[in-house]
Length: 379
Image (cartoon, rainbow, N blue to C red; front, side, top):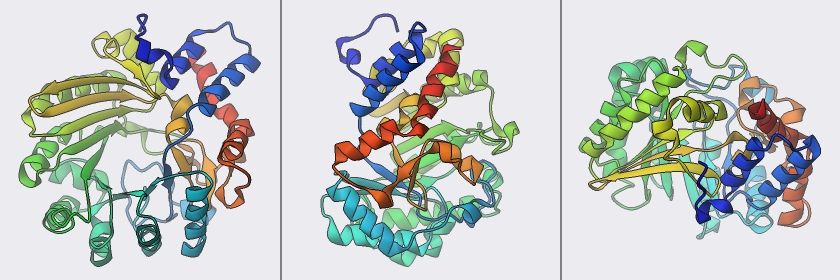
């Protein structure tokens, strides 16, 4: 990445890389410059984990089984007040709900957003069993993008989801979605989210082709499984070399789809830097743009993207709220009882202007998490 395009110079990703490469900085200067990157790249959407519990027992899940014991659920009324505050004070116009099991509270909060805000985009993350359980209400919601978790064909998906019949039910629900809310435009876009593991690496691409040809699904996203605090089982994690090989296979494959967008997302910096030294055919194509590095290739009417979102600037892009309103850093869900050192603050205590709120985020002790990420990469 020695040659920097003009577009790259002002990007948060480029600035972040310059910090990593500048080992002469004092700890104080490193933190100050990283804070400035965050101040200049405030998040544009909020991701809300409404439900602390989950009826599923997916093998790749980062959440511990006792997560609901340590993280209380706010009431629907409280979430609606918080959304009002985030809309007016933080100026958010995009909310994403889910990430855990579906429940009635999520539906009620989305109904509230639908009824009150015509200029807000709503995203929902779900899986087949939750969709089936609440289908009569979900199909009437206004959803801009529904992201459905699918991790392979019948064998691989059922194995990773730890539930027999999971894939067949996913097919059944996809048919309902396409013939109902996608046709009547209640849902504007459907995407498939897949977690790459040692269980499903041979099934993800054929699964994409199946849903693309059978249901005309056009959007596909893949990310390798993350292991934090011994969650999930480390045997699910592919080696860095295997991840690189899968990306090459995906890059060769995507032209077989029809009018599709496929993206492979990297969130772990050690993987990105491993590419620099061991997969130059992928790394050297990455260009800094906004808060990520990206490689894009087109073939026919299909697109393939490789994204690397540096962990130390993830909060520029994602504003993640826990079930109790806490704003936290990435991956700490694996701890169940989330350490105070990883909590920026709570959205039930919003005061002052948008700039003042985010200034408190940047100045919070939890910001040292991002500083530590950069120092670890510097060695």
